[in-house]
Amino acid sequence: MPPRKRSSHAWIYAIWGLNGLVVLCLLVVAVLYKTSLQVSAADQVIATAAPGETRKLPPTSYFLPTLTPNPFYTPPVFETVTPFVLVEGPRPTIIGFSFGGRPIEAYRFGVGEKEYLIVAGIHGGYEGNTIALANELITYINENPGVIPTDVTLYIIRNMNPDGEARDDGVDGRVNNNGVDLNRNFPTKNWTADWDRDGCWIYRPTTGGAYGGSEPETRTVMSFIRGHKFKALISYHSAALGIFPGGVPWTGPSKRLAKALAKVTDYPYPPLDTGCEYTGTLADWAVENGVGAAVDMELRDHKHTDFKENLKALQVFLNFQP
Image 1 (cartoon, one colour):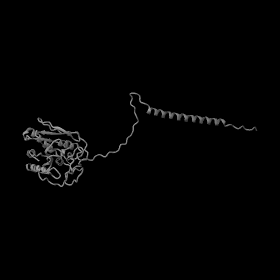
Image 2 (cartoon, rainbow, N blue to C red; image 1 turned 45 degrees about the horizontal axis):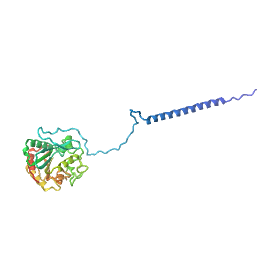
Image 3 (spheres, helix red, strand yellow; image 1 turned 135 degrees about the vertical axis):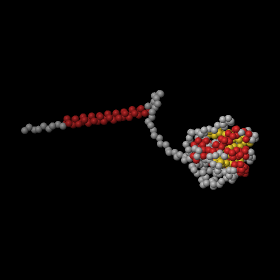
Image 4 (cartoon, rainbow, N blue to C red; image 1 turned 90 degrees about the vertical axis):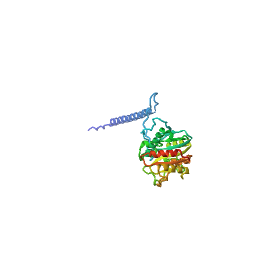
C-alpha cells in the first residue's frame, strides 16, 4: 500500500493572516476618521468669525450666591394716589423724592421773615388723615390769605411719606418703601435702629433705618429745615396720645408750644404715657438743629381731621415766639 500524503495548512494560515491585516487596516481608518472629526470641531469653535457675523459660543452655567432679602423691604408699587392740586393758587415746590421715586412737595404761604413749618404724612397712609388735614389747611389758607400774619412765612409739607400713602391706608402704609419708620430715622442723639417694643406700635415689622438719616425722605426734610430758620414746627400724627414736645429731655420752648396748642385743641398734654421710648423723631431732631420749638401733635383718631380745632391751633402756632 503506497504511503499517504500529509495535507498542507499553509493556505489556512495565509487566509487568517489576510483577515488580520484587513481588521488592522479598518481600525487604523476608524481612528484617523474620529481624530479628523475632533480637529474639525475644534477648528469651528476657535475659528475667527467672518466680518458681520455674530459668533455663537456654547452656553455657560453660572452659579450665583443666594442673596438674603431685607425682611423689612417693601417692593416698590407704581400706583399713584390722586394728586392734590389747587385749582387756583400757588404750585408746590418739589423738595425731594421718596425711596420709591415719588415727589415730596412743600407749599409756601406769606412773605414774612418769621418762618414756620408744618409736616404731615410722615407715617403715610396709616395716618392718612394728617395728609387730609394738610390738604384742608392748604385750601383754606389759599382762600383766606389774611390768616397768615404779614411778618410770617408758612411752609406745609403735606405728605412726607408718599410711598406709604400709595401702598395702603392701614397698618401696611406706615413705613416707607424700605421698611423704615421715618419718625425714628432722624439722626438724633438717641437714634437707634431697634428699640424695646413694649408700649410701642407693634403691628408690622419696622426699623429705624441702617443709620440715622438713611432714608431719602428723612434727608429731604433735614435739608429743607437746614435751609431755613424756623421759629417752630408741628409734625402731625394720629391718633389720640396727645402733644409731645421736642427734645430729649423736652425743651422749654417746645413745652410752652405744646401747652398753648393743647389749650385750643383739647389734645392731651402732657401726652398719654404708654411706656414707649421714642427715638429718632423729627421733633427731637428739629430742636437739636436750631428750630426754636417743635411738637408731635396727634389727631383724635385715624379718620377725622379735627379741622376746626386745628384752625385754632394754626393761629396759635403762627403767633408763637420761642
